[in-house]
Length: 432
Image 1 (cartoon, rainbow, N blue to C red):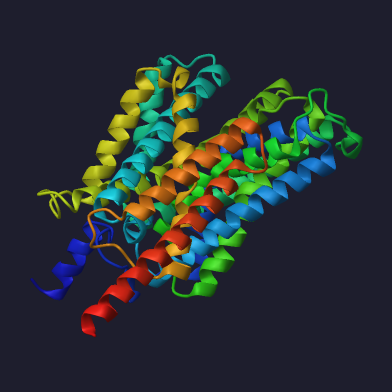
Image 2 (image 1 turned 180 degrees about the vertical axis):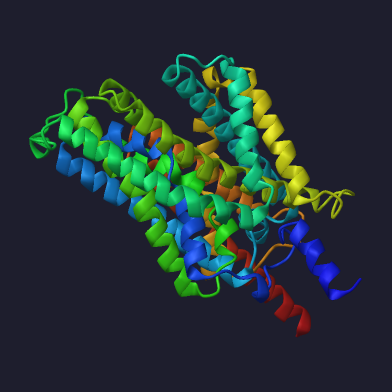
């Protein structure tokens, strides 16, 4: 096999099994475009709106800033380790969990991605149905069509993500800004917004937790893109810009609209003001640039599982992406909308501690477990983080995802250093 054929083979698997080569690293602008495309999502309008109507304006802004600062720290820290190793999120997790342990995490990533894709397919189908009275297709059929469209960029790998994001990011931002300006005009320029008093107040903890919890899954899988960076500084710059624009920017817009109209849902607020078409066009790009990233990330996660089977190297990225999209389309067609929220809530408790493990391994323990079947102290730290995060969520204490990540980080460091120390001592005794 010549060099060109060998490179084409690696491209077919989207460099899932090895570090991204220097020749395939992308520019800072490309990194910003693709990373920004992911958090530019309708859910961020909703998160910003719900936080804003439950807090005073100043508290809401503080909650949005605090939550996004946590997300950016996760993105930058894990992204830098992805740059150094050239590995995706799933394969990076091997260094903390071992082979089988990382497969469990990969399954959770894939399930989470599929549920989010199917949920958004269902939501967008309902939006189409309510926006256009003449629409003749059923909601399940419409949802399937939407998901199959999102699949078109995901199956083409980084190139496909970049193409859609290059179109979608500017379009989504322009249409969103137009919507906010229109709402401002209809509401006397957001008059009295700083004096807003919530009718049904929520706590600052609940508000900041909603911001982090709503997008921590997205932050966790950003290494899938950051591994294409050329420099560490590019990860820092691109990650900060992408989440300031995509997460905080859209949440801020959602907050303004919600306080001014009383609607926490951006599309509902726009519809009430007769601006459904603007909201619909913005939604097209917001959803596409996010869901193709979910399909892409789920494909890489499944490749991590496949690597340990007889199918290793036999199933391309495109084939897996098609399978994931098909499964999500099936769930959407079966009406998963009514059952999916509890699934997502429970999965998020187990996914949020993982950045703590990755950061602890790469920054402090530095004893990769990629060749182990299971790294048990990684599993213990993971479960401990999930349990404490769940308890914090039920008790409405601090920011539950941060509690989970912090717990997993501390326990992994303690156990990792203890195990490494014992191993080193044993080796010294044998040598003596």
